[in-house]
Each structure stands twice: as structure tokens, then as C-alpha cells.
Image (cartoon, rainbow, N blue to C red):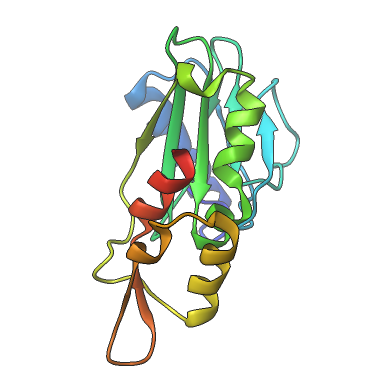
Length: 171
């Protein structure tokens, strides 16, 4: 599905068509050029080139937002009425940089009216980060539970709980 990993463009187009058909999507997803940042783009129709962003929101029916992840955390949002949706690609850089907050702001819905779902991502037993990543979160989040999301390991690094960090941000 990814146009940025060196696959043949015609194979990517065919796979995207198969996805649209199998999932019975109402339209072509808004594919992004994800950059591990906090940019959000509203899905307002067709784009010539994928926008550089790590989240997308739709405020009208028939719009499909998409993000792709490997280890990073996909987070899906919907308002209680089901009239607005969003999706964010939350790697450690985007998460500490505010991609979830920016997505919520772009949805233009009061946070208590939103639901958020955390998708599959690297788990806390495998996500090793350096002390600079831990320091960035401690400085940015500044809540007492942040340090509990980092377990020191024998290599002088930390195992980070991306899910726990996302939950702290969402709270």
C-alpha cells in the first residue's frame, strides 16, 4: 500500500484498489507522506500529491483517512455522533511533538465528545530508546506518571511504553 518503499507504482495502485473494494470504502483514502511530525491535514477532497503530515481528519461523510505504521502507534478518533473522524501516526517523535493534541484540535470537537482507539504498535518489552527520548517526554508531558512508562535496561537505555505514553497524552 505504501508508495514510498520502492514498490512498483502499478502494484501499489492495484493493492490500494483491492483494499478499497474489499473494505467497501466510500472513496479513495487520503494517503499521507508521513514525516514523524505533528502535522494534520483535513480531508477536503482529492490531492494531487500526498500531503506531508502524520494525521488526517474528516468532517464530512464519504472521506477516508489513512495512516501506515510499522512500529509506530496508529490512533483513530471519532466523535460520539460519528460525524467526524481522524487518524494519527504516533511514533515517539510525533507523540512527544503533539500529533495527538493537534489531531484533536483539528477535529474541532470538545475532547469529552471524542473516542480514541489505539492500534497495534511495538510493545513496551521491545521498544528501546535512549535517555534523550525519556528526557524529552519528561520535559514535555511533565506529569508524575511519565517516568513509569520508561524501564531502564542493562544497556543503559530504556524500554518505553508507547501505549502508556499515548494514554497520558490523551488524558
